[in-house]
Length: 176
Image (cartoon, one colour):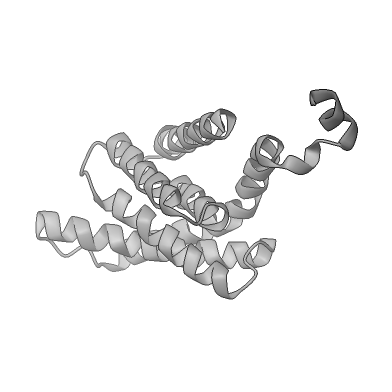
């Protein structure tokens, strides 16, 4: 379990570094995939219990602290993404790469609108402009393209530590 938590924390840190620094060092107006959305999506697919909600909230709080602007909008968006993922994955098979990409697109749009509405509430300004909508759409499309690959990488690195099928009968006999 410790390995799962460390892997997830490292994925969160790597996503925040890519999203906040590497892409914006190329151009300040560059748009990056939203890795917080992808990680919250992964939690919604794999951890459907109160620990998953807490994990999504903590991911969002880490994103809020990394942005150093407001505390709350990214956390609320991550919880919305988690909830939408749990609801959708209970109705359809969401682990197919195409379905996962469409779910990531939908969740990224929901996350972005949650963020815009909460920031608009904080600063009392209308952020619903054409430029903001264009940026939201591009970010959602990039997130949808990257999500199946990132989730597959997470599954490969985490599945070894939580998958009991990796032990064959010989190794179980040696333990007894």
